[in-house]
Structures are given as C-alpha cells and as structure tokens.
Image (tube, rainbow, N blue to C red):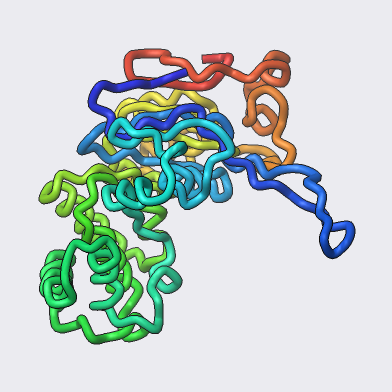
Length: 330
C-alpha cells in the first residue's frame, strides 16, 4: 500500500517499531521473550504546508510513530523519506544536519524543559549546537522568537519553574522554531494544558504555520481539536492506521467501524441532533500490543466482525479518491 503524493514533504513506508521484551537469567545474560508491537506496517504521506492529524486512543502508537519518524527511536523496519532522503539509512553528521529541518513539540511542557537552564539558553541552544549563530546573535534571535510566540522578550533570564503550563509550551514552540524547520511533529502539545489555554496555543500554531509555511504532523486524541486544525486525518488503532482521509470527508462519512465509534462519542452542540444520533459503544478493552489479535486488529471489539476478519489482515486501500480504509467490510 502507498498513498504517494507528488508534493509530499514526508513519506512513511511500511514503518515498523517493536520494543523487545527481555527476561534476565543471570546478571550478564538476558533473553528476548517477545516484543511490544508499538507501530506495525504504517504508511502515509504528509503534504508540504498541510496539517495531518493523527488520532486514536491512548497507547495506540501515535507518539511512537512521531518519534520514530524523527529517528528518536530507530525503526525495526520500513522507510521514512524526508524531502526525498531516507532517514532510516542516514546516520551521524548527515542525520544531525537533517534534524535541523525537523523539530518536535513535546506533550509535557513541565518535563520537556531543562529546569537548570534559563529560557534564553533553552531556545538558543539549538542555534549554538548547529553553529548557526554566535552567542550574541543567538541572544537577539531568542528575543525575537519569544516575541513571535507571544511572550515578553525580557524573559530570557528566567527559569522554566517561573512560568505557567501555557507559557512553557510557548517556550517549547519557540525552541522548535529556532532552527527554521519545515516539518514540526506536535506530540499532543495541548493535552497537558487547561482548556482555556489550549485554544490559544492551537491558534498560535496556525498563525506560525501561515507565517513560516510550516508542515505539521499533529498527534492528539481530541477529535474536536483535530477537526479544527487538520487538513487531513489518519486514525490509528493498536499500531496500525485504519483510516485516512480529508478532514471533512472523515467527519461526514467515516468508513471504518473504529472511526465511527470514535466520532459517535464526540458531543454535538445541537440537542436535537444529539438525541437522534446512534452511539456506538465498544465492548471490551484494547488488546495488548505484546500479543495483538490475528487478522484485523480491531475485530475483538468490532460489532460487525465476521470470520474473514480473524483470518486475514485487511488491506489498507483507497475506497474513494483520497479516502483510505483497512476493513474487509467497506
């Protein structure tokens, strides 16, 4: 399966990331007894200038996918082409240079900033490490970046503990922007923030995207926020992508039973529509990624599952132009 697009900045092909489970026998010896199937044969493109939303339940492999794309986790197999270059086979200095073009905004603004460094040092460090600015130049650029993300430029000598969660996440955004990347992986950047602050951070990300021509892979489990910010949406379940389509198409015509169940849980502001609509209640728990079900990953909770679902893994195929799904029954 491939969803190749001629203007793709990022092309993920058959990406697999398994974490081995080891059991120690003696102090020096350990034996691999299994693996966590965090990401299993995932393929998609991210088109230059768009925001691709990646959604799914907690633990389905969204964050691992983002980190594996950036090579923070090295993949078990598969390929990640960024601006035409395969990151999986790129190593050392070449990979370090490529990393300037790809940045990440982390989920937890409390854990992702070094408490022993000032804001100026945190944002300016990438510029110094990559040799893009002298100390004096970096200080000026940091002030400009703080202004761009809506913070006072005089905050450069303060420490992370002096800021609120929303302000810390803005510092994280400024750090990601410092190297002028073309792709930013946003790993649930608003899930740890108050609801009142979430909209501010999302609006900031949208403004920066227009200003700098950024491309986002936006990872989240809030379907309302994904609908607001995304151009296209990919739905993930237990390490695999089950549906991928344009935002409007996905929300008006979800094809996969899992997507239908997710969307049925999103509140509708119209009381009449809310009363008439059919809720899809999923039975049971998400299976363990150590021992995922045979065939379709979703079959153990799917209300429509038939015999073939257990025997054969559904192909991820294009059902209508631009709308992909992995389901035998679609």
